[in-house]
Length: 225
Image (cartoon, rainbow, N blue to C red; front, side, top):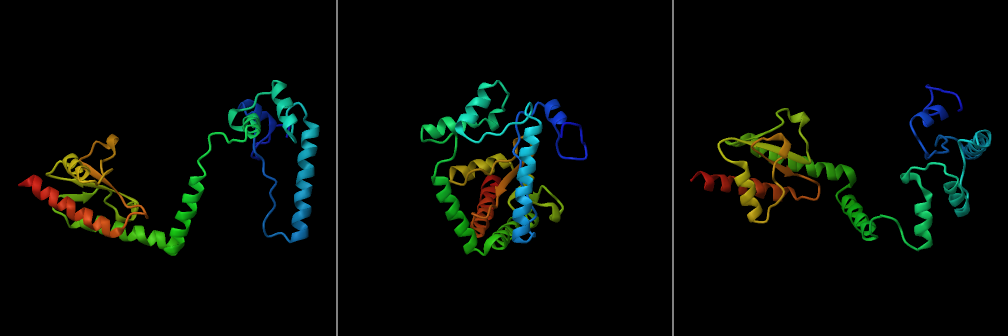
């Protein structure tokens, strides 16, 4: 550990050269080990970790308590902000969290997972986007004024479709859609192409996308008249 070992994922010289102040290490054992063998292997790895720390006290130190966190921080040893346990300690003493999502996100996540499972899990969700992609790309390929930006079907996204337009200003289409409550169809700005970007995420009903294609046809007819 104290000498360079490029064949391993890390060593102390490389950590020092890269300015690494801390790392998260995992005491991992293969999941297919029998129960007693897995426990033994885990304990052996934990023993090896603490032996490593004892042999390199100038480089490595473990924090077992809030006091250790404060002591190590006060020693002047550099700790990157992302690994600074003082933030967790200070906020814990205030009975609060630091820059974490609201609890409502956990509720919403649970609702989303339940909804995905109701569709048949990942396979059901994927088939839903496949149907949406079939609707949007099929419409564009049959259109006289629209074509898929990605010409090769196997390389097209099934969650976001970019559609090129010819003979009609796509920004005017997006403006008309937005005026009627259909938003976020504007193109990728850096591409500089006359196109719309259409979301086909699992939460979007495929039938709504079929309605969108008919709305675009109606707008194009109105702009052409």
